[in-house]
Length: 394
Ligand SMILES: [Zn+2]
Image (tube, rainbow, N blue to C red; front, side):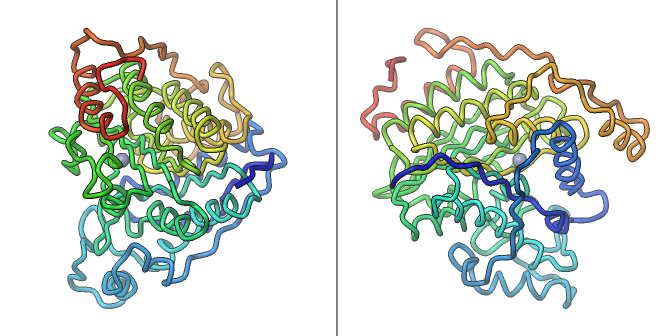
């Protein structure tokens, strides 16, 4: 596989706002709208053609979803009653056009994957994707169809034999892990708040993959209130070594930002600055270990005014090599628009939280809860990759 220097593919169209779970649901599409508005006003998207996605066919959905589930998603808005399959719950309410809107989100991520596979781009980003909880036959955690899993499955059938998936959402990437738990061609790594303390209650370090795929599911459960330095220490103690051994042909990343301190649904304590560091690290790792190929998608993130727009603008900028300086002021047009739409909200003034993101690399001897999590994960999977879990150089 040869890599040509190309402009990254950015997938966006306002039709993606149709994935709207309605009412007071926290997964409010305004999060996407405010992000694109901010990125646009900061000039991050200047001259970048936005690729307009189309809904994927049912054939593509069948890669990872059961036929009876797809049928239930299609029928639910018409039939009423209890559609089963995790649909019609508080988390996953039925909405008009649910199948079409969900298929379009999958199409967004698939378009990025196709652009990379065709050599038209080495990187692609689509912030509407990242619905990592959806399971084979059920909706889960605000996710109807699993765009990440469909795209990875498609990549496996289109020239890719080794795909690495890194999930930085505060919740465990359970849907994607489950889809490829027994598949040695897919390395899934999820860093998340500890399952004792947060839904979905999975993602223990002992979950390492099945059969021939043992070692290709990796979980780093972090204690509540972990801040940027601890999170980044854990990331760097686990992810680069595994990618170095696995040698993926592409890095797929779910970039949920509900790990932020102000997120209302979870209890990690990262900052916008930490998120920016994560994206820069993912970019470096894609360059170093995946031939530069990087498919980035969104995910969770429920502080939709103060956090999501800034963090995902940093994501878009990082993918485009147009990194936004932390001290950059919020553009006045964005502040005016948001101020009018959401009066009374305290708006951010700049692209930083002023947080300290420097961290001590993991080493032996430390015994705070983050270091214990790191050690447990390394001991669970490093030997399966020929790495020494107790040697900080590995
Ligand atoms: Zn989440």
